[in-house]
Image (cartoon, rainbow, N blue to C red; front, side, top):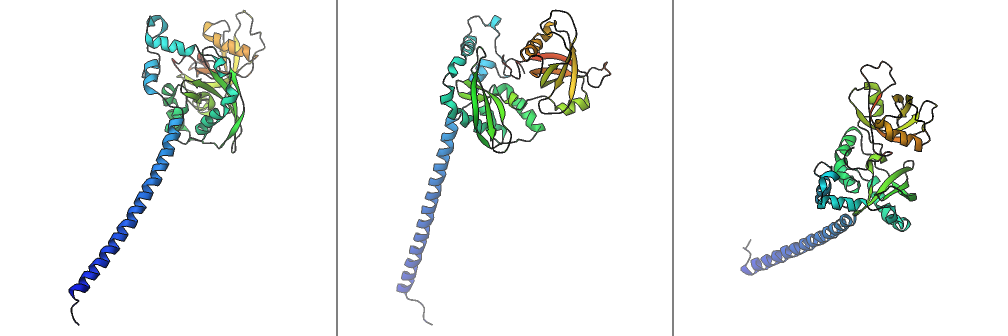
Length: 315
């Protein structure tokens, strides 16, 4: 069999060169198409991130310090720019929410993203007081799994009259869970949700607290009712028994307080507003080593207003 001629070899080489050129061309087109698709997806994600409320960490740190507390108290502030800025922010009122009905689509978008979030990084930009609340979120989801819900809509939303704040209260419905009520704050970066009250944050599960009976105080969001039939507006120095229960867990506990003790002034005000029954409160509780009754606890502190922390200086 004769060897292929130079012409035939040259022809074969040209055919292979064309084949490789075609393969290179088609692969290049495929790569360019893939990059174009990824660029479009990246742009869409970028716009979504740009449009959602953001945490301006530098501003938060300037206002509240790295631990979430105000850098200066009023008596220390003098002419401090930081304090002046914080005071100006607090001067805003619910009058700024007079157009709340027109902003419901914006609010719905934030609530949908909040309730359908599956991770802490997803939920943090949507939470009010996020710098202070972040360790609480991490603690809670260390003890409990995330439970995303399929957002359905807002039944109603109304402004809340709290001087110095722009709060709203809304009922949110879901496709896979019962409706709940949530507190929202309108901030300079948009609507943010009060995460703590939305899940009744407590430092310990109520059932575990009853079972373990710790003597070191733990913070709880509870419902308080007067267990004794006495006049809450009376100035008489009479011990008042308070019944405490968790809004979503089983078990009643009791505590005894002096209605005239300044330490319990906030508790008495909230009980009076609730007509003595199911007042939402934030309490620091513990069992006493000296107390033998299994359903009696001590109240060490009353914090916040209802289930909200307002002063941004503690839990």
